[in-house]
Image (cartoon, rainbow, N blue to C red; front, side, top):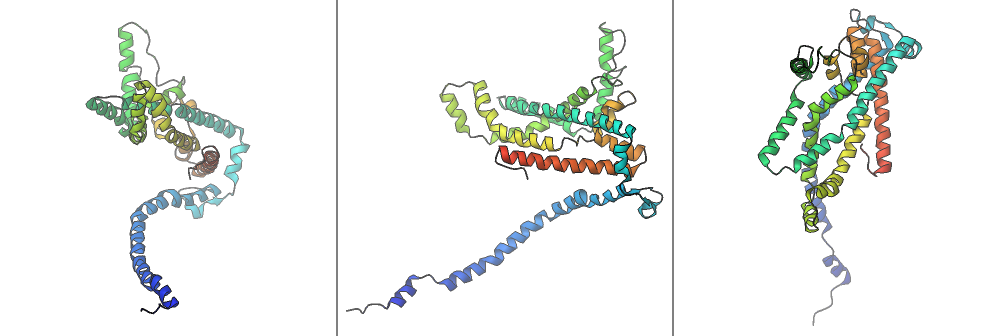
Length: 330
């Protein structure tokens, strides 16, 4: 007859060896730390680049508090405090210029936002092309302009649309016009022209993200739609487009948050004495004041205000996204 086991002994036999688990946990901890440290080291170069190009230049905001003269340096320049910020709202001429520049900036930004649906539509129709070689050809030809600098784009525009360009020569040769049309050296429809050039340059590149999103759509949705008798246009409208809407709205909100950041390269190469008033966006205006007008302090003050407004817009759009969609951008 076997004697009954002691209760404490039975409990100890059933209980796991905590010392063994603890030792194993302590054994795994250094390896996890090493893995995490290696992953951190992999993003250190990116963090350094972000700091050097995004945060370190913020030190330059101090120039807005001085009457900076390059020959004297910052230490030899006169400290003027908020004089340049006051000048922006106290000078009628400066106010008129700022109003016109903001009008140009917002108009071109809203045209760009309105045209942001074109890459989505282009990606949807491009995805429906069944011939792979033709699809790749179209995608390559439409993506290539994104890698062409705006200087070369202007050279193309000048050779085609100048008063002595190919388009005017063709129209004159067939008798449609008697005098050359001024496509480039005119202040008419400048906003629309810049928007069209922007669409031509970025259409294929902007569609890449939507094509990637289309590749991630569950194919069973299309199979079910075909079983129900849906055609190609029905599947595009009821499956592809709704599945792309989250991606589109994220890009749309980012575009709204960056509504004041038009860049300056496009407008710099296309500007001339005829269209300067209607083509000058905020970034180009800051460049013209700082480099052409040799007033780096005023240019810094305007750039500071633009950055602050952009941050406020980003936070506002982020709050709106969180309230409407339940997800935030940052």
